Amino acid sequence: MFKSIQYKLYLYTALLVPAVAGTTICFITTAYLYAATGVAWIIFCFWMLEKCYKRYNQNFNFLLNALENGDYTFHFSETKLSLREKEMNKMMNRIKEILIKARKEVIENENFLSLILESVSTGIVIVNDRGIVQRVNQTALNMLGLSVFSHINQLQTINETYPKLFHQLKAGDNVQITLTTEREELQISLQTSQILLKRGKMRIISLNNIGNELEMKEIESWIRLIRVMTHEIMNAIAPITSLTETLHFMHRSPSRPSEDLRQNTLEALKTINTTASGLLSFVESYRKFTAVPKPKKQNFNLNVLIEKVVKLHETAIRKKNIDITVSFPESEPFILFADENLISQVLINLVKNAIEAVETGKGEKIILSVGKQASDRLSVHIANSGQPIPPDILPHIFIPFFTTKPSGSGVGLSISRYIMRLHGGKLQHSVSKDGLTVFSMIF
Image 1 (cartoon, rainbow, N blue to C red):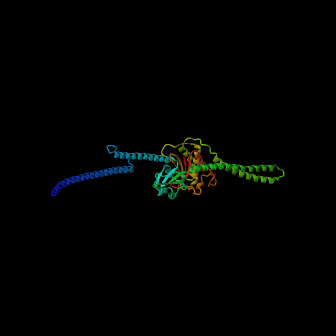
Image 2 (image 1 turned 180 degrees about the vertical axis):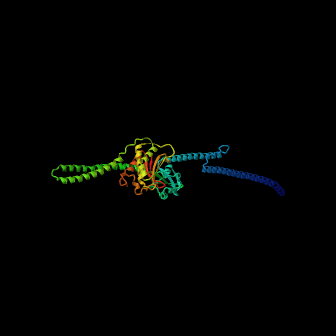
Image 3 (image 1 turned 120 degrees about the vertical axis):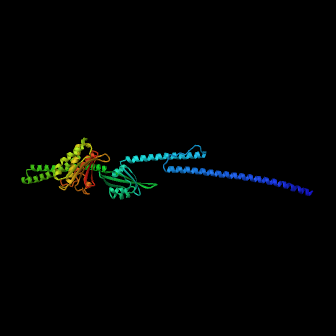
């Protein structure tokens, strides 16, 4: 029986082991299949993720490259894409629109700034530490007499010391210089400020033409001085009147010896006469300066007036053997709206001075020319080949009653400049490239 039971156990074991083994093998096969499927899905997900990542990177790189190159014509598609890609493309398109708006605002601000720079009467020059001009307005170019201004070293053509001067300007500096161009001589005030940008330090140099203000203040100051001095001179005449009365009283006194009285009277009268004559002449010089009438403007032919003035001085010109040239542009005559009598007075004075400046018999020349400047202002130039005005005298030539001539009154140039100011113009001194002394009437 025992053996029978043992036999059955062997039989059952033999039948059970294959069944269990088959089930185990089937389970293991299914597990591997699921594992392989899961791994394949994970790999696919990573591949898709990498693909999306690359596409996003490409889009972002494209966006950044386009913005860096200033290209705003692109547009990312927002259709037939996954929800995530649609959102991403919408976001990048929005970024583009925001940057376009910001760029338009920057352009508008730059245009507005450019308009302001070109509208102001102050010259503006913006330079970096290397002397490279970053920006310059037309007013500054006109003052400097340059058509293009890209580096400070270009100022050497105006004055060899100016490049160094401009390089050394610091924030807060206020320097006055004289710019002598072919057309005119300008008194310029340089004011410097500084700003720090990402590209480095920038110096903003403003150029202000203070010549007109200085001239006007100078004339006004002298007019006030003249009034005061005239008053004082007239007061000085009062004692002369008193002395005359005293002499009159002495003549009425019977106790005075006749011969002594006569001698004293003659000496006193001689002194009074000399003093009075000098004072009257002095007062008359002042009166000429202060009594310039208000211009009565009307149209007249400037060419004809210049020819008349030259004809008035024909004798003096012939006597000194001066070669005089009158140059008019080949166009219609210049019609000037001004007071012809006052302008004639200025021309006569300038031509007379030019004749006196040249020497006799040395082939000297005088050139009168009329033209228009870049600013459409009419100008008359009277140039002579005489000796240049000495540097120590030059600052004083327009000051009333300053003269180097023995018989001069020193009011000619002062009155001439004052007349030009009354017409809204200028009278300026300069030296041409040929070394000629030039006085320019600028209307």
